[in-house]
Image (tube, rainbow, N blue to C red; front, side, top):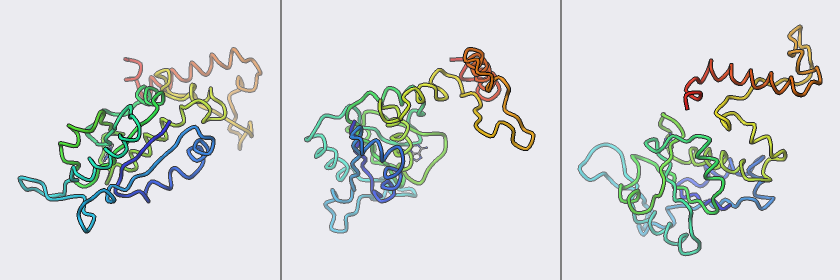
Length: 225
Ligand code: ADE
């Protein structure tokens, strides 16, 4: 998979992709991440990429031209499955959408700023709009990093134990059961006996029961789907 991220703050994104699982995925050649500085596509001598909103009002709007030019260059080099705009008014990201996107080959992600992008960017260039939750971040970069992380870890070979992504919370609309590790007794707080019983089947049943219990208590909406 290849992910191209368009941003005015590439330095904000270099961190999340240069550590741990995301770095390993790139080293293994399973994913390529390319950051593009939208300012480099500005024709303004000060590399300006925003301007006042027509009609007035507070806040600057990201201009179409630098974004259009950047997208055009990338599209001339390869086909993109999706051009995604990170925005709080997009579709709220869930595991189903991550699974779907993990099967794609080339993704472009646009991180917005200020009051957002000129509406014509959305009309002409964007194929999908995604929000990572009902709150507003100061820019789309961190949201783009969250989306990328959630998608990349699903690519076969990225996680050492492939089954571990399948048993994540949400994969079957259930939250994960509690997990424990050594010591079996910490200051009198003991691990549930069944987990040390060696009875694999009983353990599986216990885990499923706990998943259900937790989902009913914390996210009953998941069970309604
Ligand atoms: N940009 C600002 N807030 C955002 C959010 N919640 N999701 C996606 N992009 C955003």
